[in-house]
Length: 202
Image (cartoon, rainbow, N blue to C red; front, side, top):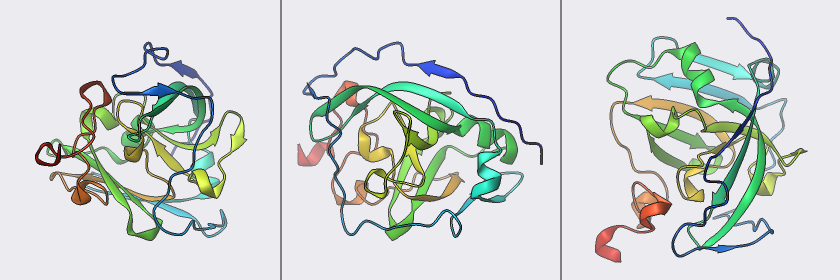
């Protein structure tokens, strides 16, 4: 397996845009269902599997040898607040995809996390060049409350799609609704369309 390190800042073109129904804050509220785990980097592992040519499992040292990138993107929470300027550091999902090589029938990415949390992302969003596995926010290591040691960042969707405490990335040929999706949150979560909840609940 080939590893290299390189930091590159990618900035969302619409970083100053506020989606419908949102208000702007400079705070970064913590919203979590259930207890917050305290995960040691020594014990942490990431498995990338599913409809791929190569299943891999990485420890923290191996993950940190992957190509690193920086994202400057807004964060839009389904509870209506938006924090417009955030700099995340981590590994793009596209970087992982180059290692595992998703099969042509893979159409979704499922983020799997501690506490049996999961969320589903269409593969075209996961591989849009902006979705990331992040370990730093605004230059600081992620705290457990904000998903440390590692969380997904999916700038094109509401914040619940940016899952905390990630331990697995599955490329799937099925759309498998995750924790909040089966509890009434919209399956797609596009903030430009205000897809907050399933239509029948709106």
